[in-house]
Length: 245
Image 1: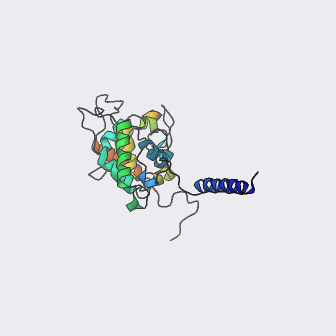
Image 2 (image 1 turned 90 degrees about the horizontal axis):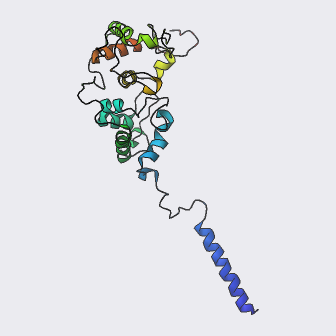
Image 3 (image 1 turned 90 degrees about the vertical axis):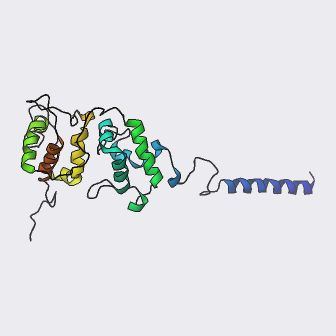
């Protein structure tokens, strides 16, 4: 073989290897369209899976937090409240703010995609047609004493008269456990009463009382029940020792 030709062949092979190595160098961005910046992700399923599913469940239910795959909840909350809570979070709870302004990683556009995706995927525009549901948030203070009475009428048959979860019908978790109340806000309690937890057999606000099958819970009664449950909160839940002044 001609020495000159042999040298040229070696040089060409070396250049090919170097070129291939640079193209696949670790950490080098690829031209693949799937490799997009986090703030450029606009797919609802991806945004939900990466930011919401851990608490609200893979398909919007059966998570530790309230079910989002609930037409009743989505209809009562509405886009504005969903957008606000997603962006700013709920202070004092495990719900963080996902907007960049609140220290999160999502843009306003991504939050809007999340909200519209929830409504499109799990909402039902006719769910509450012809009905006037209670408001998403209370506009009046609650009365704890009246709340205990309302709880006895609407909730005790499943949650027990003292809300500890012991009843003749079913056995549920305690609603006045200090650890539980430390993790859920008043609005969270209200939202659960409004939307129910269908996957766990809990009806929404349209549930009827045993003594009055044509009457459903009203806005003020929900506010009062929340006030009564919230009155069981303690300053330092889970502290095994006595607090000294």
